[in-house]
Length: 204
Length: 256
Image (tube, rainbow over all chains, first blue to last red; front, side, top):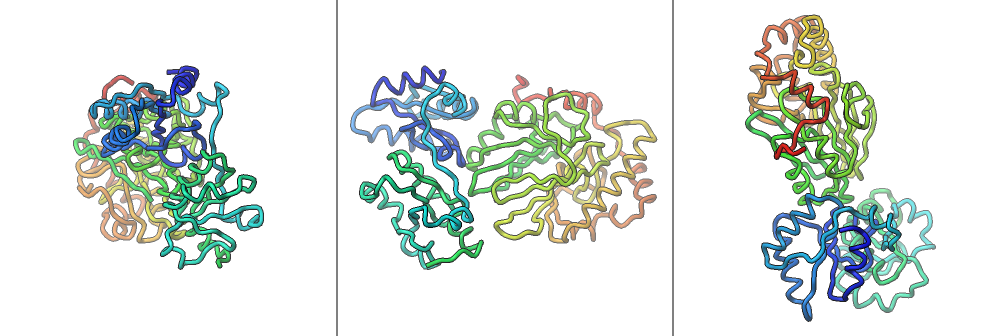
């Protein structure tokens, strides 16, 4: 499927849902608006996605997005074995999508040093669980645990820019991608509090 | 650090997927044609690692590589020593060059001997400390043995010269801290080593200094012993190396 065909498929119906199969920072550094991140795994991935699809209100059709043919084919085969064949597959990655001129949702990467040097420009949101906050928080940060983010996000002003932090930078990456989807300007603090503390930056 | 070793027990070959678990950046080192492109792509994907580079510690003469096929399937560069006379598009690795994967670094040391294009990779995890954690020694230093010097060029003078280079290279590796883990490209009864090669796929620098018979010899004895102990070369060694030089070492399915 070409980028134009994928765009047309996505625009065709609200029941068309795109699953982004890529791992690492690929999704946060740039994904197709509305795509859901579910990195492909040989074990457990297909049952989880099939189950998710069956639990939606009304039927959905799944599209698979990746940047190489091996992973996209493995994911498509695994879904088909679950009885939920993919309706669309795309294996040319973000480069092909962007080359066609289509929009991208992206989260900026922010190092702890960059954040420390410009702390007043950012609203810092710490998505760790309450018990993890004993190691200290970035001065001025708001604590919003991952589980509450969806509920709290509507109360956050959109004119600010947000830096999301957790212990290692993993959870905050998903949180940042979620907020970017909601139209916020967000960055992920790479390495999270482990690097903030490691670099000797102050905590409150 | 994510560290996956992938073996071909038939030929005693080791290959590696190494990555930073936080940033998801990683590399594949010495991917084996016997395992095939798909297995590396899916294993890295399972580990949450995005492969940004495929590296070969040297152009192999005993087995077909799938490095070119893997690099092109992923759309990433294929890196080999600057000394490798390869015919495919590649990225040159220089001595002392530092490759960065999130908080991991791979420092390139050119360690010629087994082949003129042999290299080793010193692995550090700066999230933990600045000392080397491990070294991928390719076919330079093995567990209990050293890489044979005769597979790239079978001319007698060239073999002797290669054995001298190998002495220098393994002694350079011995300067690493004792606790540094040693992960070669071969183990067991691989034809790239001799009769002393151990069945264990890994060791440490300190243990090899104590236990590896080749590391307590002076250069002349080392050269003499390496040449004296040479086994018959693996079947088709020159032809296999030629194929790998051309980047047509195949994937498992033979398709690429």
